[in-house]
Structures are given as C-alpha cells and as structure tokens.
Length: 143
Image (cartoon, rainbow, N blue to C red; front, side):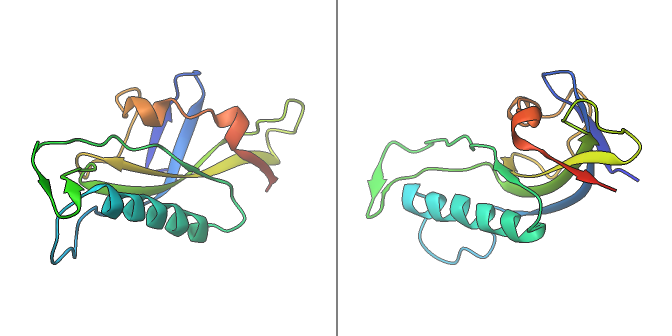
C-alpha cells in the first residue's frame, strides 16, 4: 500500500511507500542557522537517506535557502532552510524497457526539505520534488 502518488513532470507516476519527517532545526540549542550549519544539515540528511535503504540509490533535492536578516553575526548571515526534512522511499514501474512489469519495479530514496509537515501528493507536490529525473536516478529490481 502506498502513502501517496506523485505525478512527476515527465508524466511518470511514482508511489511513496515510506516517509520520515523531522524538524530541520529541532534540537538546535544555541547559535543560529547559517551556511555552515545548513551545509552540515544537508550532508547529514544525505547520509541518513543512504542508510535508510543501502541497496537503493539516493537522490538529494537541492534545498532552497532564504536570507531573512541582512545583518551578520559571528558565523555570517542568517540562512534558513525549509523547516521540515524528509526522506522518502519511492517506487514505480521498471525503467528499463522490455522488463516484465509483473516481475520488475524501480525504486529511489529521495531526501528533501519542505516548508510544512505535509505528505506530498499528486500534481500538487513541490515542483522540485516533481522534477526528479526518475529514468536517470532510479534503479530496477526484481520482485
């Protein structure tokens, strides 16, 4: 059973079968969001995604970064990532033409940031998420 379906810009339909969400800055006790902290957050999310399903390829959607405050502190200007980190396991039909559709599927683990704790769904999912190049990134497997 899938949690939701997303229609990619290419027209391919993919199914979200597993989703992990957390607060981007949860547990941050001191300091403020800046480029250095955010680079570490992005790298950590990539590593978590790689551990989620070691046998499945991983794609990190490049997050947007906002600069709400023009002043700089000790670590440079304030830089904010979207407030929710996500790791999703997606599946679809096989990428390789000619594979038996009953025996083969394709999979991809995707890591991304989003503004709210909503399950992405349909054609309303974030544009960056819908722009995934599935045919280049996903890998086929046999059931």
